[in-house]
Length: 90
Image (cartoon, rainbow, N blue to C red; front, side):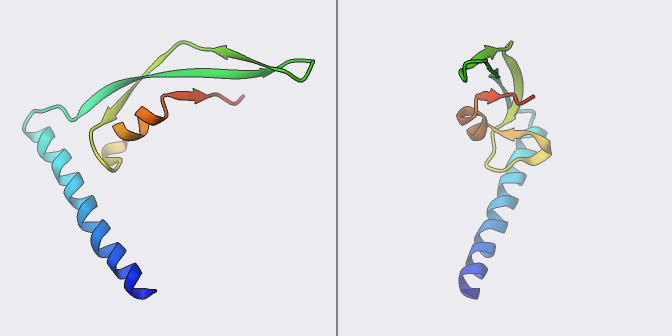
């Protein structure tokens, strides 16, 4: 079990470091590693007859970053492509 943990750490730490380095390198070379994704948001509203009505809100633009991990507080683009529809719970 310790070997598996050692292998996972020894692979993931250099991968994360290389990913952060590549993002910083692209920022320094004035290539923009960021993009914008339009997010569709909706609010489910319960009705009296145990049905649900969906109220769609205005689309929202969110900044993404071309990276595997989320450096600098941005969300990676692979995650936002899959999660482009958001439910709002009130």
